[in-house]
Length: 388
Image 1 (cartoon, rainbow, N blue to C red):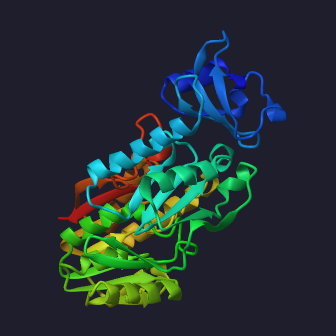
Image 2: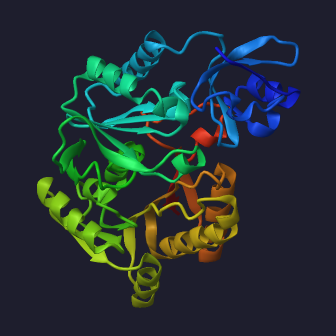
Image 3: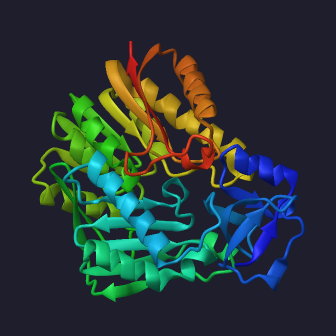
C-alpha cells in the first residue's frame, strides 16, 4: 500500500473528526506518482499511521478517510461497510423500501451513494476510489440485496473535479422505467435515468410525510417538482395548489395524484416569484405552505444573491400565511449554514410583520445520516413555523 504524509494542519483536521485532507496539506504532494483512486496509508510527520484513505490526483480534496486503521480496502472491508449501512436503515426505518442505503462519508464510504427504488438500485461513484471499485460494489450489492437492476447516475459535475467523465446507464440486470416508488400512502413515478439526483429527492421523504400531518384548509406547495409535499398535504387539506415552473413536472404531479388516488391537488405552471406577487395582490391566504426551493447557492460566489432569493420567497410566503397557519420552509444549499438560514427567515418574518413560533427544526431523513464534525453532511435545513 502506498503511503502519504500530511502536514500538522491535516493531522489536526483528522483528529478533529473530519475525513477530508486537502492537497495543500500533503507533505509532500505525490501527484500522479500514486494512482488516482488508490487506497493509501496516511501518516503524520513522524511516520505514525493515522488511517487509510482514498487518494485523488485531480481533486483539491486529495484524501478521503475510510478508516482510522491501516488496513486493506478489499472485498471483505467493503462488504462490512455496505452491510452496516443497510442494517442501519432496516433498524431505524423498518419496512421502508424506497430510501437511501448508502450516504457517502456519513456511512464511512466516501464518494458512494446508493438509493433503492422498488426492486432497483441507483448508484453514484463520485470519486476515483469508488469508481475503480464500481464492479466490486455492484457484486456486493447484488449479493446483499438481489436487485432486479442497478443503474448509475454519474452524470454530475462533481465527477469532473475528480478527473472522471459524466456517464449514466444500466450496470446490472435490466431497467426499462419508469419506476413507481412509495412515500407512505402516496405513489410517485420517476425515471431513474432521467429524474433529478438519483431519480428523486429521497432526502425530503420524511418531511413530505410530516407536511401531510400539519396540513389543513387551503394548502400551497411552492417549487413542487413532482408533488412530494402536495400529495401528502392532500391527506388533510381541503385543497392543494402545487406551483412548479416546469410543464413536464406539472404533468408528473397530475399523474402522481392519479396514481395515489388523491383528489384536490391542482398543478400550477408558473414562476414562483411572479406567482407569489400576483397572489398577494389578489388578497389570497393559505393555511399551510411548503417552501422547498432548489439550491440557490451552489457555490460561495452565489451566496449573496441566494440569500436575497431565500428572503424574498420566505417574505412572500409569510405574507400569504393565514393567522395560525403553518409554514414548512427549507434550503438544500450547503453553503447556507443553519444559523444563516434561520437569520434570513427571521428577517423575512420581521419585514412581513409576522410573529412566528418554531415548531420543529429538521433536516434530511434518517436514511441520510450526518456526522457531527462534518458540516458538509448537514446540507438540508428545514424549519416548521406557526404564524401567531
